[in-house]
Image 1 (cartoon, helix red, strand yellow):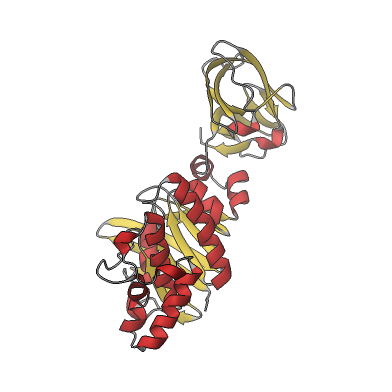
Image 2 (cartoon, helix red, strand yellow):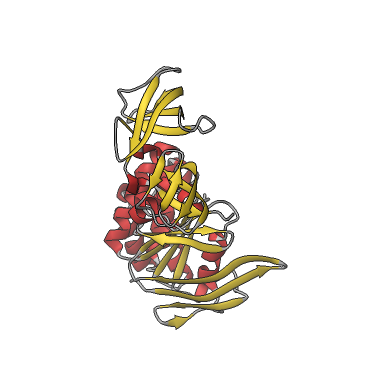
Length: 346
């Protein structure tokens, strides 16, 4: 089962604090959405509104065309999977997975059959009789997912479900989550502060900042064509270069960027470290002196000071076979369309 979600004119205050500001969002049935942003940006509050744990001050939430704005969590077609998993230690995995069905009055045999199906879905078909303490962190996460899906929610809400896992396991579970979502077809809304996680699993990323939706789109769009300076900075690393826009283009220490569109006035030209390359190009950064370099496996991260802007330190991600020593001089360049221009006022 799956359903579309619509959020219209949503605002919420905690006392005098305006936590959610003019949220309007359409989520297609079967879509995998990530709500991405720093702590305090409103992403968990928005998830809580969707789950019915917070009644919004203003606005409307509909799921599958039904207004659920004031509907209690237990009566919504949603299930929430929390970071701590909240498994019952005294129950077997099968009983944990079937708990929601038991509360709904489903008979023992149907409950057990559904639990077995869900445990098989998450790769734990042979572990039904085990207890949570016998499992690894990743296995407990799978059990929590199986329990959430057992009740056949139209929308599954995930609150930082991978946050407690180590990096290697987290990446493996990202792949599994996405594969399972594709298989069951349920609408997933997933909260995270991890940009790589959001890009790895989402059909669409919703970037939030200070209670507002700052940017949204497929991962490649949000990363390569950020809608705001905040989104540009939050979605990976950015170099900031002082600039000034006029009718001819954008003037930088490295020359004019004629193809860049920006309002007139003081601006910042942003470029990602991987967009800086050795040699010549349409935009010549020119000679630069290496401050330091570190090897990261698939690339070398290098801090350089360009001759054309000696007060500026740029980060360049260069090929892994290039690990220059401090004091080395490099010649850098970039494509003009690799720059993102944002006005910052006069």
